[in-house]
Length: 111
Length: 251
Image (cartoon, rainbow over the protein chains, first blue to last red):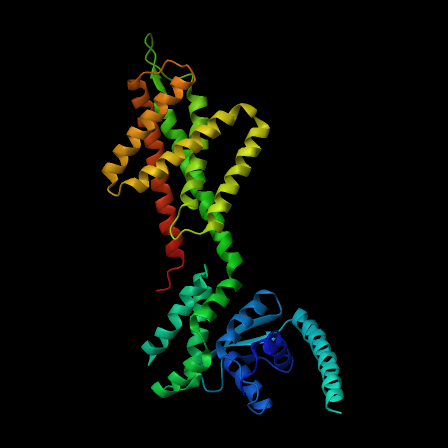
């Protein structure tokens, strides 16, 4: 599904932090995981992921390391740093508050 | 298949302008593994490229991520360029200021050496600022930053020594003449002759306006030294530019 770009601004960072708070992943895996969990409703332009990952890595939120996957192919896996975990927690709470507020507003208008 | 993937990746890596070769290689490797994960058939690659989005925009986003590194390297380049050009300028002035005493077999520097060396340093600063300001492709932000930095350095120098105002005014004037001559001629011989002629006229008129006796021959001699200073700085600027560009070469 295509979304208004304005809706998606700011979601990439939350999405990366949330998924990486569970386990370390590489770029392509993050994309597929986001797609799978949202039942394909959430499809990023894949190219937007890498600048976000590099920005977060340089900001000290993520740490990347190269390692071989089960298939033997070498990939760059990202994991959260302590700073990244704090940021993930904070972003998650903000997001939940915003979405709850939005739900109540949208729900009221439908009533 | 690798060639097709590289054709997609290389413009992104180039646009990212990452100074570190290691980081560039890592980005290349990461993007390659992304496209390989998408599938290794031409159709799969085509789909992956479509899902990837506008590669120019991705390169631009990555350039913003690494902009601080780029700026640091740029400042280092300009600093090294000024240092090298200043040393070369002082050496040229020292060679031009060497005098052999009549009554002894001893070389010494002319009394005007300190003044000439100071002017050489200021001219170097003005010339590097002019080179950065007028560099192709022209951008207003870079031009204004270069002129602004030169103005700040001038203001600092003048606050320390108010007598140096003449050196800064003359150096700015000479730098403007040099830039104008460089644009007026393409071949280096005609550019050098034109610059020499323009410097000579400027030297002569400047001294005339100040009421200092300075004939055309002396003006020509002084201009020849100015031209050497000019040429050495241009050479150093060109060399540092090449080194800077090669730092971003992706292949």
